[in-house]
Every structure is written in structure tokens, then in C-alpha cells.
Image 1: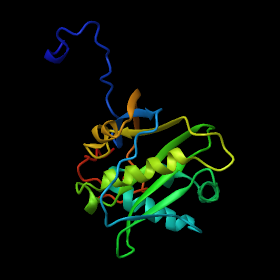
Image 2: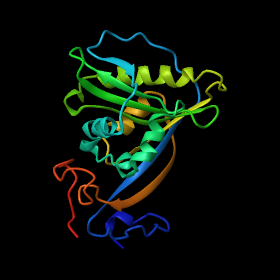
Image 3: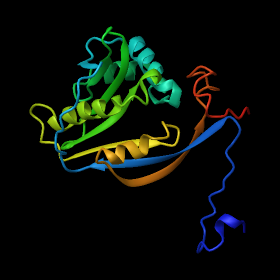
Length: 212
């Protein structure tokens, strides 16, 4: 028994070695079941628009631009056919964040497929905009769109999302400050997307690569 388990009743033996070529993360699920009060936000350099006629390649490039620093890879493992179906699904709207020069600044992807619920699937800004207080503005836009729901569907009663230990270190704290409550956790081990070729090898340098 090591010092970090002394005094812990019946500690769970969870020290399973991670196979070479893999990475691990702790995933936290959070939810919001009450619409927050809408606060006035200051002017920002960003605007948000719904993506239209986005090709699969354009979507993949957007996904890599925003997600590579945090090893987002889920959409990159999907077939072109499934991604095309996703982009054509009105219940899964995609929004693009732009700066004043109309350059890509972030993305937001929602999922209204479950009645009365909205999942915030992907939400993020380009790395150069992190730490500038723009996340509050983006989350306000996100919650407004999520709680508004969709025409001819039941009102939204619950919004939920997932974050993990590969995300920005402040992500979990940020979501809780925005009114989300954690309700579940899980541990995931999967092949490193940099070694599988889904992301460039220089992505997320803060996360070590364990060569097989």
C-alpha cells in the first residue's frame, strides 16, 4: 500500500497500465436542467452563424483546427458517408464562430435528436483566443440556441455535455461556473489519434506520446 491510499477504506485497484500507443482520459458528464437568467454581455470581436452547405472536407478541416490542440478525433474516425449524413441532419446544427475579419474563430455543434434534450457535442475556440474571456460569450450564445430548441419539437428540459482531462485545464471549472452540474464520470483508454494518423504528430504537445 502506498502513501496515497493510507486511510482510504477499501481503495479501488484502478492502476491498470495503459498500453503503449494509447492515451487515457477521465470524462465528466455535466447537465443543466434550469434555464439560466440571461445576462447582458459586452460587445465582442466574434460573431456566430449557422453553417450552410459545408462539405465533409471543410467540416474535417474545421474540426481539426479547433480540436487538434485537445486531441479531438471522434469525427475524424467516421466515414465520409456518415459525416455527410450528420451535416444534412437538421436536428444536429453546426455553427461557425468568426472574428471581425471573417476568419474562423471557433465552432459549436448541437444535438437535438433526443426529445426535450440538447447535447452540446462540440464547443471551442481557436487556441489564440483562449484565455481572453471570450468563452463566456460563446457559452451564452450556445445556451440561447440550445434552450430555444427546434420548431415543432418539445421544449428543452435538459442540456448536457461532456468534458475530459485532455481538454483545457479550466474547462470543467468553467462549465460548472456557467451553471452545469456534474452527474457522472468514466475513464476511457483509446489509441493515440496522432499515432493512428487521424491528427498530426505535433498536435497537443502537452500530452506525451507513448510509442508502441
